Image (tube, rainbow, N blue to C red; front, side):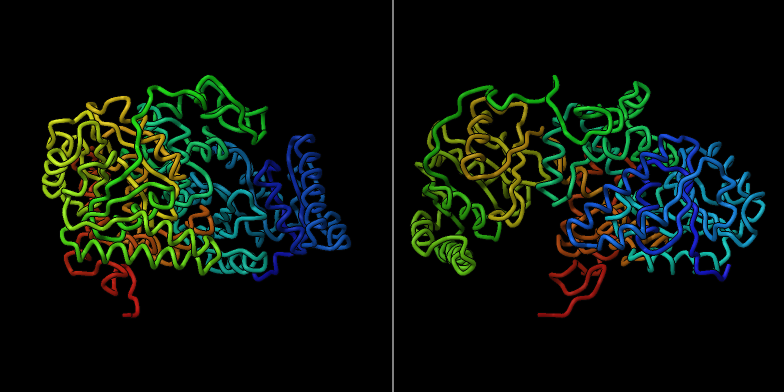
Length: 593
């Protein structure tokens, strides 16, 4: 197996196979594309021609390099064409029967030293290898879609794989400009093993009618910085493919979080598999199109359930980073803001934090000095909640402690005028418990801002069963005026973002506990393979392990699902005082400031 892998056969010229062929051809490899469908082969050639033409236009390659790449890609309909290949990569239908048929045929075609790689992300590489005459040469080579753009390649070894085969394809991956990560054989490997559980929960959340598809997707894009929302991503991947991956994951883990949401079965069996069929969670212009078109579920932009109340002045309770950030947001939008803390000194300190933030904006050219001064003049610091007597909207941003919040809402009930809207920024506590601390629960709603509030566009608008329609309408209108994107959700633990984000983070911790992968490999896999702005362990250390544990505990108590139980490693680190960046040590160690 000590070969440079200069000739590579790619079996299956669908989207992924064509993408892999392009990567190989542009990197100087001779590529033999094989597909039983002549139409698929022609489409692959056309796709490669179009893609390389775009690369020339963008000056990423020369016209000569383009011609050379195209000359290195030849297509065939017979597996016999793979006879001279140093490496074969199969990317056929995700079923044991289809892949085993290819593997058995290859045994009598290719040389004994030829490496055979499967592109599966759901099936057992070990089972496929065991069915081969030379199991030591079989491994997994999992590219991500679109293969030319995505940097991650998971190199999957079975207990039967020869180390020389792993070394050869790892070297190849680096030569292709990819980042190879070595993993063992289990469904989903690293990236999809974490990604598909999250996608499944998002599908279940939508199926339960907890939030609309648009709000779920917007929440995860704007609240987590993800390139796509989960339901749009399921449509891109293929709902049938997602169901296959989840079935494989559940058969191994028996974790309910991996049991495919019934809606995935309903859609896939109806032929509504996503973009490739023209309809999935969304409707598209046609099969294979990425352009979303209106359908019966698309919300009407002009639809308003009720007329909101007038809001001219806002009270923000709290003196921390979130409180000052929220006050800054309202003041920038032209609202008069009362910033109340437990003392006048704390309130003045919070206002000075706003002044520093606004000055940074001036330094960066984002606002003028005059606008800064006008904005700051709208903020009035106060040492008591009595200053909220005339505000139209009161927003609390105090400690995430239910008793503290209930006491504050009881005070707001006495201080605020009739008709004032009372909002909590809680991220995990029941909003209705705050509402019941008042004599006007119909006026209470959740407004969950994200940190840092001036930069993050998302606000989760949380209605309780007691919140009135006009209060809900008021908060949505206010969100638009302060240039935030509101998403509607009900009053349950985690709302949208945390209910989807923290089980994913918890599962990443379990992956480390099980010694399946390292912190660095998992973080790299999710950034390079999933397009995440931060890996899960980077994010956990930034959020704080104590905060993360508290949210995990709330989710576990609310949903009673064993799969949501906090990972013991997280509990141990918190008990040891390793809380992340703020203490200098969490999953990683940090230099003390």
